[in-house]
Image (cartoon, rainbow, N blue to C red; front, top):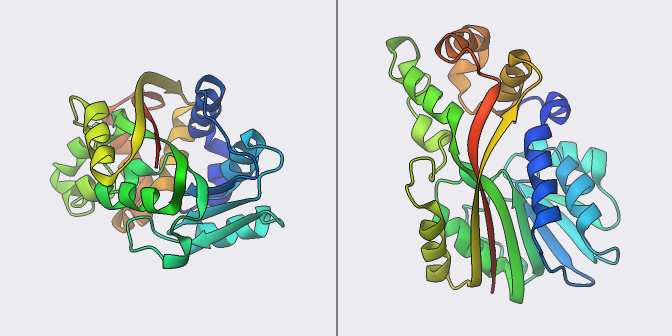
Length: 256
């Protein structure tokens, strides 16, 4: 994530999806809960949404992110006696002292960035105490993925977007049955009481400019950094209604 202050101004889409999910989904919180938030980003969702929905007597919330920039920003703005932030990549080997340390593992808008899905889900399982549960919210199909793919086939952008499949596109973007894919994966790593819901959704940014600014915050391609305006000009030519997003939201729940 490149511009955390701008992201805070424009992240209504993921924030609204998390709030709606928590309002509609009967997630059972444990009293004195120890909670891990994977992919905390700037820390605002950890603090403003997950903390507000957790039991008042929660023991601790730890937000993790693989970006040290995000961890430092979140620590500076949101750290408290019961809320902390650490650098940790869910696709890497876990520190042994973290295993079996959490009653709940939650995550919003992170697992579509994860290339090693089985490793990540296995790590979530390891992090939980016996009987602990996870609630993971992330994208399946997402209209911009297809537009980035189209642009990656153009000679002008092919070098900059050569890693579009592994750096950007959700592993479930092309899936005909993402729910069963995820259920089977979670069963392999040991989860029980698995529920996977898929919601077809749309979101309208206030303007195309807001959309392009949001995508700039999330841009994983170094080669586009100095060419952003040119790239987004081509994107909007390809998709004049760029600020109107259609997508699939996956809501995943399971217990250890």
